[in-house]
Image 1 (cartoon, helix red, strand yellow):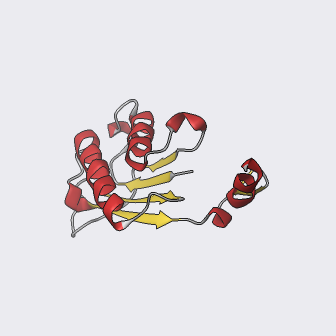
Image 2: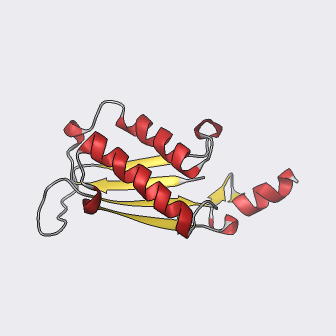
Image 3: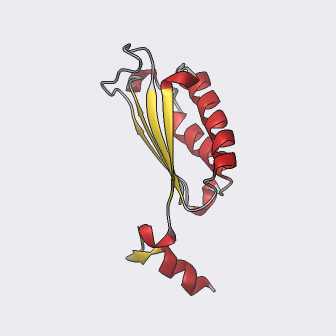
Length: 124
């Protein structure tokens, strides 16, 4: 499940060619979930009308939603990895991106016409 949602004022035309796929890989690595098992979702919303600190220099607002792996200690490391990635790829200074970490419960996520909680209970 993790889902990473990025809103940025960086224009679509300024995104690196494989930015979506590179973002998926960095999120899978940061949250320690396998990208290949259809569990990592990334949504990029470029070209947003945004200011941060009163300027329109490159900035972002993002959210990482996951079931587990969201904790005070883990969030620090994930924030570092995500911020460094966005600085390298989009030129967004780490001080110009807020990341909201949301720890979801299995019953809060629907999938396959039911919830993750029900799907997981069927696997045991």
